Length: 194
Image: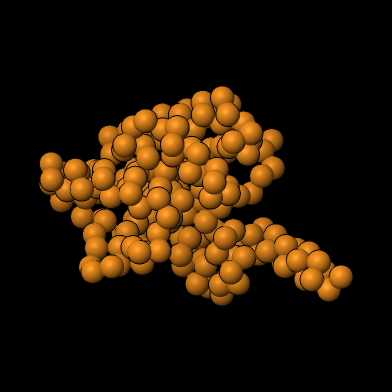
């Protein structure tokens, strides 16, 4: 993530603009999943066909939390299964078209995407440099995660539930989001009181 970038969320119209500028259907699907789930780019790129499925109007995304160097060898990989109401999801058209083709041509244990996170980042950087006004500034992969977490924090979701959704191990990781939400709510309260 660029250290100099100070923005904390993407607006829906900025996400829509980026999706319209992306030509590759598989990259559109990656961006939509980043926006919906707040998952890390490596988690999204490690998804297999069987990790995304639906039952009626509910879409399930089963995200494995990847091992890192800090994790002991015998520690298991945590999973979080996220549920979404399909009818309320934004940008579902871009996602559905690609996933349907993948389900037809791939086995259940195959990776959905065969792309690198660097390539995804390069495309986002290229678009945001070419269209800085429309993108609201610089865009990088982790900004989609920040956006989802911040939007959930703004809805005053319990911190324990937010931690489970995001896959953070420590509550301290959520403090920046919760502090920003408190400032925003205080700001709007002052505006209403005037």
